[in-house]
Image 1: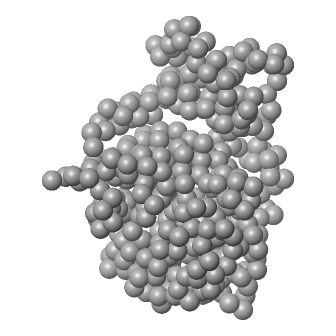
Image 2: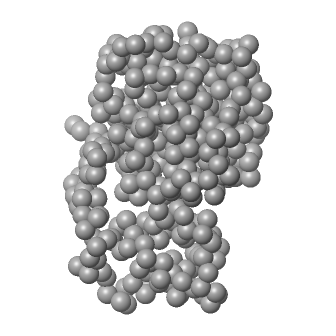
Image 3: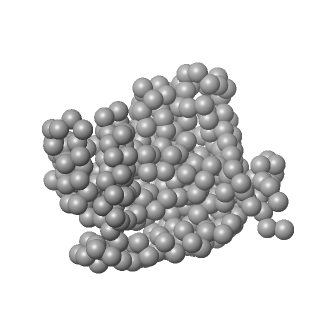
Length: 384
């Protein structure tokens, strides 16, 4: 009998091919939502030229804007990104929505912060420079006395997998378990597993593998069944920051070059609002617009055009809005439509790269999906 996850539905593969977006879902009847996403993405440009066929009634539109503004005063960033989600779902143009937002401003100011509004559109170079003060000053110092050698492989059979492990939450104990799963993957000259791991002061005080308990942030290479500390001097980093995200992407891809690259984000997820929080950094979350900024900066600095795979080991990240924002940065996206159990993915699945180093990103995504189902069965978190 086919396994269907109620609380933790099977992972979704989102495949980006140039201007089109295809979403393949494992388990459950998702044909309706898939068709809707494909339709929205394939007609996006024509809708911007002529939106009359997709406009809702004036009453419905006014009601929608009123709902947006019910959240506007308390949480400005999120309400603006909600406009973005509405735009993606309806095809309404940015200009139309912006006019309505301004005209319905409950405070009567008609003013919108340009830095916040930038999350409505793909950031160009000038916007990035304005928000960050430039793109050339991101540097993550590495302890040269305790760093791993970068992979040297001239074949087309090498992978680097980066894991942005936001463990400064109540999920910390599961992060430790996932590290152990990574360490179970046999060593291979064709695979680098590199983690950026932030821990909590409050939830657990256990060490992991050969590393004693710590409460700040460290970079590890998972190798020989152990953790090789690449940097022990970072202190407490805010993983809810776009700059921190960009720094890790830049460092990981530059220090461990490979023919294929994957990036996995790990924590609580909430769809278009983002992921997190980082509890020891004021409960900051990594918002969707910060992901975009971090990817833009990190890939540019490492001179990588596009990731082969991006994954979200988190709840609720397989939405059209998230996929649309990730499309410029990765060919394949692996994420969950609904809630995941605490154990999340099974990272022993990365062993498939050691036995088949030429594996394509789409194949790897399928392996991740299937192993996730098996993992749920082993933990008893599945339903028949």
